[in-house]
Image (cartoon, rainbow, N blue to C red):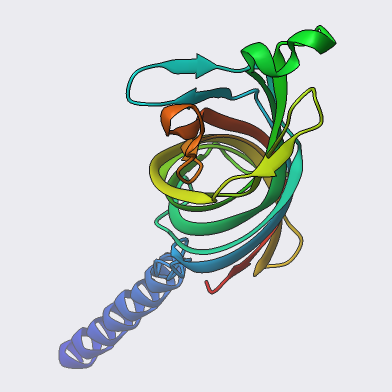
Length: 252
C-alpha cells in the first residue's frame, strides 16, 4: 500500500514539474533575429553633357615687338555659346570628380591700336583692330555635394587643366580707309575654373544640372605681323562667366 502511494505521489510530482516547465517555456519570448539591411551603393560612374552661354571679361590686348609694346584701348570680347561633355565617378554622397571637354564657339574681339600718322588728318590716332577667338578646354574637376533635399543637391566645385585658344580673321582698318589682315595663331595655356550649382534627380539614373562657372583660359596670340618692325598681337587674361545647363546619366 505504501509503495502504491509513493508511486502515485511521484507521478503527480512529475506531472506538475512537466506542466510548470511547459508553462515557463510558453512564457519565454521568441528569439530576436537581426534583420539584414541591404547596402545601397552610393558610388559609381556617370556621363554628362552640357550647353551654356558665356560672357567674357574685357581682355588686355597689345601689339608687341622685340623693342616695344603698344597697349590697345577699348578692348572687348563678344559673348558666345559653348557645348561640352564628360565622364566622372561619384565616390560617396558628398564627393565626385569628372573630366570635361568643352568647345567655346567663336567670339569676336575688338580693340583700338595706336596709329600715329596714319589718321592724323582725320583727327583719329588709332586703327580699328578685330579678330575671332575660339577655345577648347580640358579640365579635371572636383565637387562637394552639400546634401540632398527633395531631389535637389547644391554643390561647389573647382577644376584645373588646359585650354587651346585659336585666333583667326585677324584684321585692321586705318582711319584713312586702308585695311588688311594678318596671320592666325594658336596657343596652349593653363586653365582653371570655379563652379557653384544645383542638380535635380528626376529619376534614379538621371539628373539635370544648372550651374555658374568662372573660367580662366589664359592668353591668345596672333600669327606674325610684319608691320611696325615685326611682332604679334597678344590677347591676355582671357576669362569668362558662364551659365551652364547639363544632363547627367548615372550608372549606379
